[in-house]
Structure formats: structure tokens, C-alpha cells
Image (cartoon, rainbow, N blue to C red; front, top):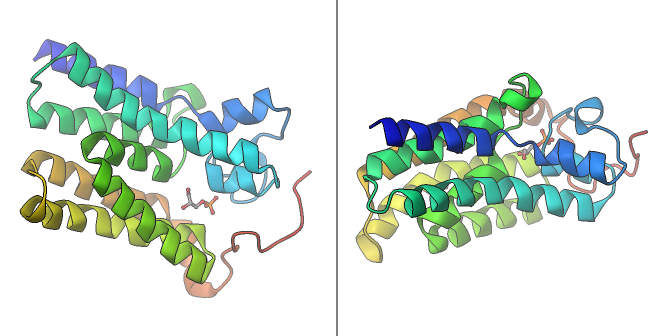
Length: 208
Ligand code: G3P
């Protein structure tokens, strides 16, 4: 049990690494917490117009979820699904409330995607495709994230019946991740309802 607790703490620390801030600093860009939605995430980094920085942020933040779970499986072979579910949640919560940023982190979309990749690659593909379809049609990153977050646990349950074996603990973790993701998008939801949410590639104004 102590070992699982150590793995959960490790996952939290991994999830806490804020790639939006790190990548921006390394590439000489403004701190993403100072412009746009002020969110340290790939979508907001994209508002600088630097697609490479945004892609690296997305990759880095997704890698955290994937890596935290992979590491736990490597260090504790045969770890119980409940333990793995806690590890997944810890990495996600690390991104939302990172110890390295005074507990003010991002919204968790990329990190949740990384968690999905580790749990079941096809689940990640289906969820990412859902994100993409909504993003292409409506041009709102946040709306795409919310719809994808809603469907991820649904796909997990359906997929379990069709192709892969689902662990209830992981299904619950995905649902909790979805709820937290919605909670972190409160301001986006308000803007979507008011029609003031910024669209992907919508504004040509660059920060700074
Ligand atoms: O990745 C978070 C995305 O869903 C919304 O980001 O910057 O538009 O609040 P943002």
C-alpha cells in the first residue's frame, strides 16, 4: 500500500510539470498565464500563433498521463486496477493543481488524452476523433474538449463490451476526470453560452 501511495505521489509530481510554461520559456514566448484565457495549456499557447510551441505543449502534457501510468505498471507489475486508477487521477490532478505553479494549473485535456493512450489506445483514438470532429465543425477548443470528455467514459464502457476488457475502477477514474475537466472549464462554459468564447484560429491578434 505504501508503494502504491509512492506511485500516486510520483504520478502527481509528473502531472505537475507545466509544459505550457516550460515550452514557452524555452522558446522565448510570453508566459501563457499572461494572455488569452491565461490557461497554461496547448490551446492558449496556440494563441501566440506558434504552432510548434502549441504542439510541443500538447505532446508534453499528454506524455505526462501516458508516462505516469506506464511507469507505475513498470515499477509495480500487476498493480491492481484501483491503484492504476489512482495513478491516472493523480497525474491529471497534478496538471490541474501543480505544486510547481502554486497549485494553479491547466484544464487537463492533453493529460487526460495521455491517460487514455495508456489505458487503451483505441479509446484515445475514438476520443481524439470526437474532439477533432467538434473542433472542425464548431471551431471551439473548449467545446470539443467538453464533448470528448463526456464521451470518453461512455466509449470505455461500450468498448469494454465490444473489444476490450474494462476495469470498473478505471471507468470510474475516467468519469471523475471528466467531471473535474468540466469543473475546470466553468469560465469556458459561461463564454460558450454567452457566445464570447474565442474560436480556434479566430483572432489574428497576437499577444504581446
Ligand atoms: O485545453 C483547454 C481547452 O479546452 C480550452 O483552453 O485556453 O480556450 O481556455 P482555453
